[in-house]
Image (cartoon, one colour):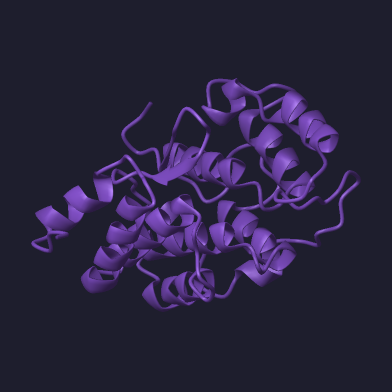
Length: 218
């Protein structure tokens, strides 16, 4: 996988934010423009909530449009890579791994709108937030995206929404730490690094980055 990939996958398919992400100016829209570009949520199939979707509906979408070759950006399944990701995210707007694949693809192509996608990449975060405003994983991943785009105030708002209730999901906890680290909020990042460690996250990327920044986790 390329160095610019934002999310690495564990054997269980869990999301872990990579320390090697780069979000360039070409992959984000001007602040405040998303609402005018991102379209309605109505869809011919769905939309479904990733957290509660029936297994058969999830299987139908993923087997046709979010196969391993699409997720890892090797090839499309029923057309272009971005077209398959777009279908997945219109059917399941808060599909976290599909959001990350679309983000990676935009970065690889150095564009805000990968060829074959219906919307600019940031629209898929906007749509996910509109569809599932109580989904903390969407909030934290959008927050990281915004932080890396140096839109700090917006990023902090998303991270705070993700952190508005106690989180015991280790993936959310870890990614909150990454988000606050991107904002140079080292003390809060350390809090989440400790929580992630206590919850059994086996990856040391967050702790290593804090140490290199002069803020080691005790």
